[in-house]
Image 1 (spheres, rainbow, N blue to C red):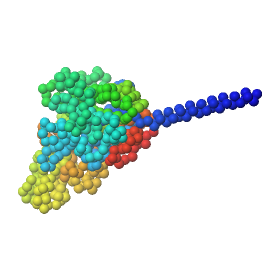
Image 2: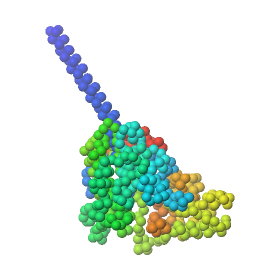
Image 3: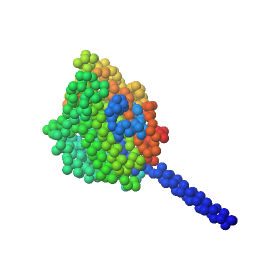
Image 4: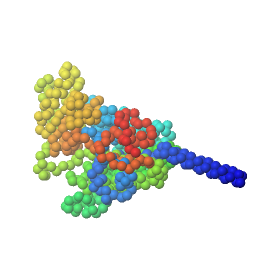
Length: 539
């Protein structure tokens, strides 16, 4: 009897020990799964993304794009960029977690006071033949999220970026990217600069097997569904569908293509091939691919009311996002991936019809204002060219002449501001001294933060709503409402989809500088080196 009891006790002990080992093993596997860093990061930056359009069109979206993001991810309804940022500067802010005053990217173009010309902020080339090769992230002064992903794996991983626009591709790729590619405005080929050394096989195949230059004449952009199905569309708009083609003989065709919804499709095609053919996320490292897309008002259209084009761009964008997500599902799987999408401010519409409806409007000519201001200063201080130029809302004074005459620059700026403020159409003028002292605009702290002083002018001018600034080299309208561009805070939505991050909606306004440290925390890597805000508290 004692022997039987002894055997039973021994069997029970073995079973308990086995169960303990199984439980411990399961716990270990679970902890490993929890502790494993995602193997793929997909970043998507969309110019002009507006949450109101996403809400308006939600019932028309498929299940795999925006609806999947809103169902399974973190929705941030309003990320605040502060005043005066275009898509390039906003993307740089997202990727660096730092404002232009720190990261060195205040706008897509900047003014050279020596040559008195403007040039792309990330390109100082002076000849058109070397323009593409001259783009460089060296002018981006701090590290980016993409840099930190590459650094954390000691360069053994792959980090790629792709966009229609060169500066968007470079900002998304950063300094340490394996490659950064964009569509060449002249040839239509996927191209890069001399800074980046890798050319993925995907790019070579797209350039030689199915080059855009041989297809561009056959590409057309038209509504993707019947006009009667577009929501909130006036009845008269339902009878006039748009149709855009891109004839190769037009020197602007590749630019227009890149700014369109069908241009997004081309970028997405390459991005999907990157994920599926380069094996991103399938090795024991964290790879990254960043993609630049756009739903900004189509500036090459013929009508001032481009609601149909914009809504169609959102519908197509939803399909593009779904294709990217499907590619992730088919390779590494969403359980091992992080996807984040951030919108950037939309540029102001380039065509207005205020005059048609007798809404007060006018034209502010920088060339004429420069001439009048210079004559005014000459009457006070003697002959000379006191005003060097105008760019992006700023008048630039001639500091060499000011120094030569022994004048006080701050006093001269104050005199100039008082004079400009009396011009027709001018609503507000701030000197750079006002901006430094945080005494300019509706949000002076944010305006100072978004000003990169080495490239800022002396006087920042805003015109009345309804007024336009002319005098570009092509005599185009630069911006219908400089007041909104220069001083109003700009907001866009963002989404983060990651394993073990609960789906939620953040309705409060979130500083856009929080996106990079938040994604960094999810990846458990170092934040970009100029990050100044903590990550968002998401579960």
